[in-house]
Length: 248
Image 1: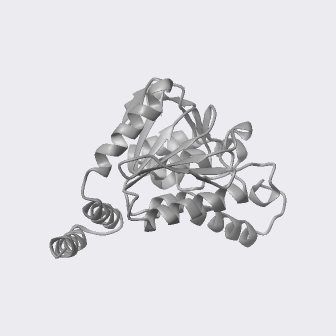
Image 2: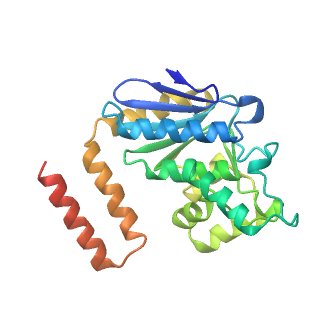
């Protein structure tokens, strides 16, 4: 196991790496240090051939409460006169080292959601390829309560998983979505007892780790292309992927 105090990284077995956000006293709210440690752990995992699947979770009783608003650099409060460009620059850095970093991992990624995934923490969970939730999991966008439009990929994730109308409802009304409702909506693939989350989640990760990692990376690239292109372009991307995979 390696650690930066606020981020733990543990290679389990069978090529499964578990990254744990480790600020349980603050419900794993994001600081500059946590964000940087998380991005570093993901970068190392993506480059390490021994790692075939990346799982993420939170220490304690929460997955991630989003940005830590006790840290001024991460606090965005409407109406205080902060220049828009400064806010945009700070948020771009936040995205690049948090949900954006997870989305960019070429290997399969799985979020093991224990407790609350709120605001940017919800965006982080949605950035993973798969989500398994403990019974205590709770998803809440929270942005409307702060007068904000959403960040950390929550807009993209919701639209992709539940469609535009339901995504708008979740963003605008900010309902508290429990694990059962999250499964019904398609936000998570499975709900399990809290005390079985790690065991079940890692078992699913091992199934993925036993598969063709290189082909999985190409599958992810194919799907990413589909989301921003037309049918003909998607066919081109698939053909290119087959050429790469078949030539190995």
